[in-house]
Length: 357
Image (cartoon, rainbow, N blue to C red; front, side):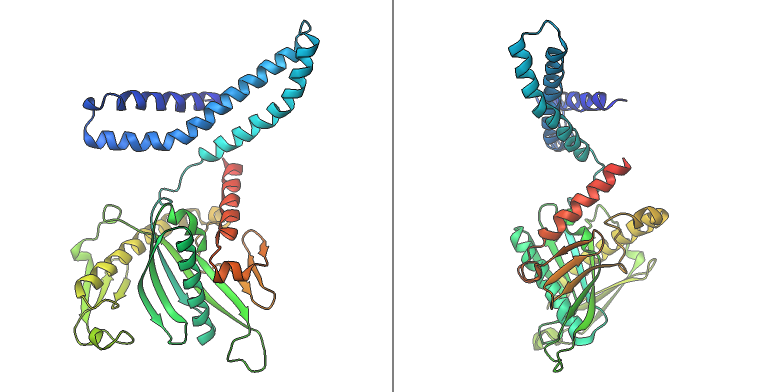
């Protein structure tokens, strides 16, 4: 099927859906909702297709005027002037359509669970993990997303050994999925009297938030342990058996939650995290079959891959996957202007997919 035929099919598909939605009595509620959603998704693509078709038609007509020996001299001169812009517009719109037609990651529209763990580097690594947590929190604020810390093991000096947060909003996973991997920091710790630069690291995992419909957890597959919470949180946290540990027996995945005073709330949060980890586990398992292909992709999702370095002495952030270097460490790490890195990552991912399509 030619490119033009594919486009015509999409235009026709939108028209068919519009006609069916124009007669809602013939549809049940589920059909109506599904078709309305499909129409909303087709709308932007078809709009560009119609612009492309019109621009292609205009280009053909201009070429005919120029090639026609009987054309009026003034008309031919005008056509030669207009054809310069027309020849730029058509390929630009064609590229835009190809990007819109790329297969969508079905998780892109989902909310996300983000997990941050301090790596090598002791207190300095924990401080850096805290920096990353605040960076994502500020980025979420800029995007008008809801950011909720589900669990945190803090150090009491502004850092955290590990933290898990839920981020809710429009296309959260699509923006944050490239953040998974090892983040490295190079700076002089406040406790370092000799001014020597230390290198430490933290690991970030971004998981699409799974709904119950995505992952079915059978009661027989899990073991739930209830125990008394320990650590920071105040006396009221520690006086009842409110902490919850859930073990998924088939995979061995374990989730522990103790930040809430209520056992029910802790269980609810633990199940939310467990569903997302199980969805990610299945995704990683499927992707391992094509691991060689994934190594060349921007969003490989490999947790052990060093993806970014934050160099404080030089005020530099380098993303190693796309050889991007920005001297904007304050804007990104402290103010949360993460789109400065995410947008080039998304663009590179699309370019690679286009090259492979």
